[in-house]
Length: 136
Image (cartoon, rainbow, N blue to C red):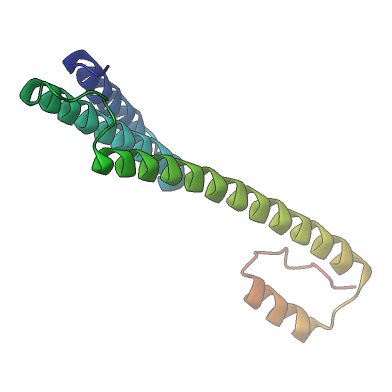
């Protein structure tokens, strides 16, 4: 049974989460904290709405009887699930990129490249390579 204390707790936790997010410099690292703060604010709004509904309507038998509140909770749960899947996907992409870099480095050492091709390869990859790389 949500109460004013529960809503206040959600608001306090949202404020603390935003304070942590302000201390984090990288946007990708900060975004999950900001998303969590938004989720906590939404939960606080739901708890407050349920309190108002209970105060105004003595006939409210269930705290989640409002279909709009059910949809909001479902949307919050789906958002959290999708955020987790997105984070896992980004981790997989980063692992694959690391493997591709390793394979590329191993192949470059084995396959000599003409100097002109090496310059184009460096320009395309955007990687700063040593000046004497690939020269025999």
